[in-house]
Length: 217
Image (cartoon, rainbow, N blue to C red):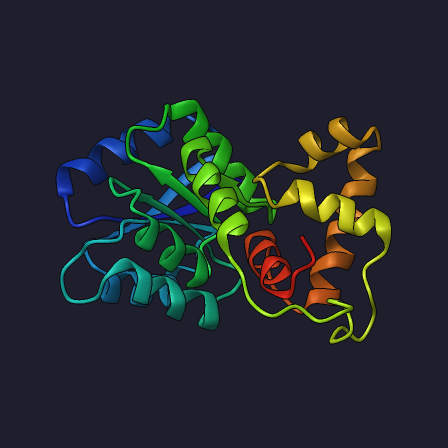
């Protein structure tokens, strides 16, 4: 079954080009378009896409606000930010709103397709330059840490889960984590599911953000 995609951007010409680009792939289907955040929210409710490609700066309602509403009301529709802006504020606002991916519009088409497929599988995907910002922010984040950062968790993470979480926080896919830690991709997937459940988050990006805030990584 093809991955259902909603395109959200206030530039009609960009949407048309993106539609044409994605349509050459048999496993991808563009089911709708929207020119602002409010239209995107309405379209998600009507079309239930698997993946939403979301611009950030748009009239009526911006992409951050739209992403937040979509991830809360339609968690099965995964949002990937696709924008020209890589300022730190934009990156972290988009990820905190619930986006599972963040790409710049100059991303190679093959990487965009890869990100869409990853999002449809429930994985996150960050462009390397964006991932570097996230990692740098993690290293700068500070605050009071308890003697045991896991004390607030109902069930603590195992050493293996912490190990996977540290690699996951760099934006690595399940396959990349498996290759780095010399375990199977299926094992990684099972551990990631457990990690999300223990942290009480819905996706990998949120897991990485919460883990850093808690001092786990």
